[in-house]
Image (cartoon, rainbow, N blue to C red; front, side, top):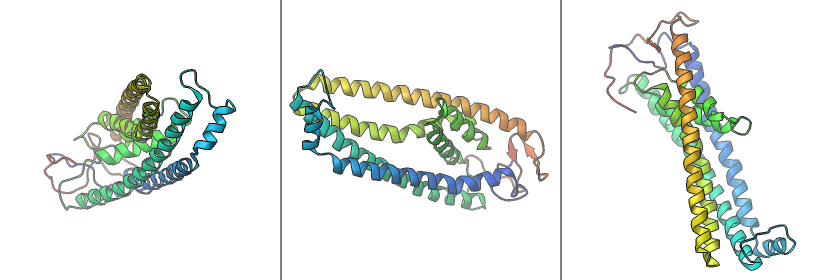
Length: 267
């Protein structure tokens, strides 16, 4: 039975450990900042949503619709703005909760790596890191899920779970904030359209949103999986050579000098 990657032992000074240290502080900080920005933005939108202001914007032609009357458009726009603000606040709170959960999960992984339990697989850690990379680069790159999947797949050095799976999971995780916010926006539109008895429009919006989310999840997960596969291939190629500190790598994993342990346990 071969040893799995750990965070101590002969490889303690390796690039592997330094990368995990960066992940340990970068992921919760970025999630916290994202949650702060989104949460405050959502709170401002929810508070600023004013029916009188929206009615004035509709009257001035700043908000127009070929489907609704002006009065109905005011109701729909007001409900959409209010629910969108609430959705952004919820998204921010979930980001903070995710940061806290990541820190707690990493503490458990480090405890298991030091000998208190079965060796960790780092699946969720590496997938989360890849998801954060995707979220950060999505504003600049059209194929950001591939880059995030590549980062998570290359970081992943445990053969109990494949790099491709980690990449796909990173892509799906990056879609979660968008999905939460979009569902609240949809709820606002549906509430507004139902108030003006536009049931058909409500159903149409729900259908479009569900199809859009499905497409986004398939796109992000698929390209994340491709990036994870490429990152895993590069990792395995690099693992054929000894690391810069002389530690031996076998089969993409770093020997830690510890006795063989049961690898049957999952995350």
